[in-house]
Image 1 (cartoon, rainbow, N blue to C red):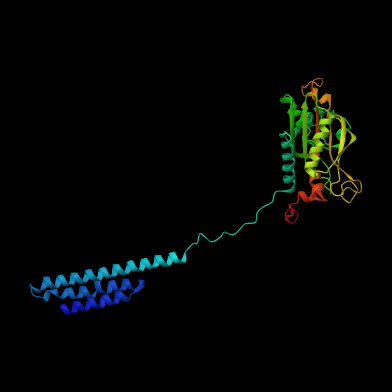
Image 2 (image 1 turned 90 degrees about the horizontal axis):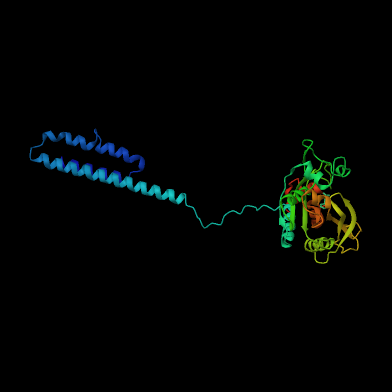
Amino acid sequence: MKEKLNQIREAALNAIDTATDATLEQIKVRYLGKKGELTAVLRGMGSLTPEERPKIGQLANDIRESIEAAIAKKVQEAQAKGLERKLRAEKLDVTVPGTALPAGHIHPLTKVRRDLEDIFIGMGFQVVEGPEVELDYYNFQALNIPENHPARDTQDTFYITDKILLRSQTSPVQVRTMEHRKPPIRIISPGRVYRSDALDSTHSPLFHQLEGLVVDKGITMGDLKGTLETFAKKMFGENTRIRFRPHHFPFTEPSAEVDASCFVCGGKGCRLCKGEGWIEILGAGMVHPFVLSNCGIDPEEYSGFAFGLGIERITMISRGIDDIRLFYENDQRFLNQF
Ligand code: PHE
């Protein structure tokens, strides 16, 4: 019987040694199970003498324990190997360089708006904003454009009600600013404006303007000229000159359209300036006394100047863009050039 038990031990340990995950359970059942070989041998214990019984019992227990231990060890080994395999398979090299995502672009209009802001901030201006949905009062009335005034026809306006509209210019921000601030005032106001124009290569029902306003004691046309000349040199180059052409705006008196010397040909005449040597860049003038008094500022004590420019126009001139629609179509082939 002893021999038989030792044979079982040897056979079981050998089998465990070469077992795989799948066969290990079968081996356990085969040797240790209720109908297993070890149990079968122990069933024959009845035929032993009382002296032999405990010895054989002891041996059988030892064998059971060593088989169980061998199985446990094998299971542990298999688990360790599995973990190792898993770790190797899922290895992550955190030092591998990442995949670069293509970076986006600042839209050319945004770029130019920021450049304009930087130039004027550098000259002591503050940036303020106003609403795009505006009262007729601020967009027209307070700017010396009463009802039925012909100037309203030049700015085809989107009306929401009789009194509410989409602002057709950034000039209402002048009024809003003067209403709640005392001079000295030195502000610019960039933003969207709306006119019911058909879309073509130079018109869009939505575009962007930048308004400028300075009000203080003793402000003169000379201050306006100096400011705009400094701006033009910073924007278009040090050699740029400007000229004023008489014009009319209801909210400025006197008024002017302002040209910059062509920065491509320097004034000789070329394709950009259409042979003129000059390019129109903005409208400007001395704030009309009516507008000042509409805002509670005494025109006897204070004077001011204002100007307004189209951001699309400035961008098109400075970047050689010949169609305004390109700004709004978001065609990457266009945008990626800036
Ligand atoms: N608001 C005018 C326009 O849209 C431009 C302007 C602004 C002219 C300020 C003079 C002074 O045409």
